[in-house]
Length: 411
Image 1 (tube, rainbow, N blue to C red):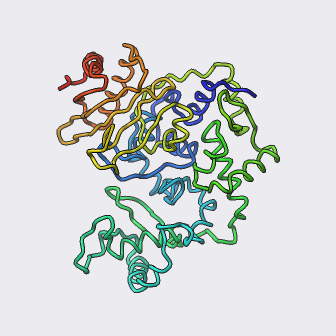
Image 2 (tube, rainbow, N blue to C red):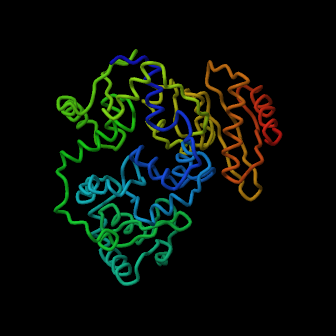
Image 3 (tube, one colour):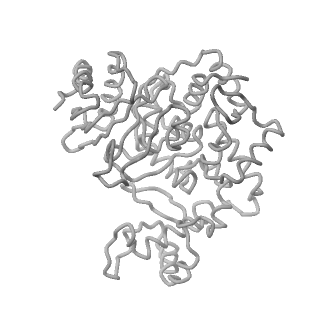
């Protein structure tokens, strides 16, 4: 099968559930199915707007109840572990991550055997408290060493909780004000037995297939990135899946490397090749959305050079602290730096940047204004304030579009 670049882009967007919104009001079941379709939902704590996992779901579902995500975790339909990064994952995929827990020493900074041995007293105290008192938060341990609780100065008990979670001894049973509440794995999954552990080769195969299905169309390199399965393993993995007939090779216009699709997406790919998939959604994306979290892929697919700048010193930032890509009908046309002022009910757009070469038509700006308005209402910050834009004239034009649907005047 041959795909034009445009068809490949539409296929990826459709596989990610970003070509259009569901034709019914979102439900709690839709939240779970969306996570299953993506395979993983990355967690991040920054909340200048909605925290990333909630925003990723909003981009696809529209105005859903964020409490549903919390409930799915508490219900046991999801679990938390390291996937692309720290992620919410469907509970049925737990066997695919158990090898990582058993070999926690290979998880880099997330686990240190030496630290665990050096702080064995703290680790044992944490485990004994949970065994005795049940589910526990880090905040329930009082710091006694006189240090602050900064990023690099976690109290020993918090670090122990994190490492015990990485090692699979603890699981996150729910969150309270987004703080993790841990309990013993044996209490959360009493029926699990490591004798049910699939071979590592089968785990790699299953994760590879999930990545290819979630991406719609992909190169070998992007398969490795999706679940962090390792670049070195990608080549033999993809070759084996192809030889076994479990994936389909396709050619994509302008791509130097072979591309692959999952058989489950064959019909979707044929529709894309026939020009029958026409993305119609305009929405804002989290920086940790699977569509854009791989900088190389975003550049190759969309010509969108994207880097999150929250860790960049402010004087060196080009676009802002937490910029949200703007997806407009299958194209990434810009990015905006926003902040939800929840107490004041105000959604501030500090700056909106349109991509080089994008001609912002009245229809495009109306769609972007609609997405901004919808996002602001979902945040319960209905007053939209646009501070500035690049090009400068965009702010006033976008404001007129917002005014027509009830937005607030630009400043």
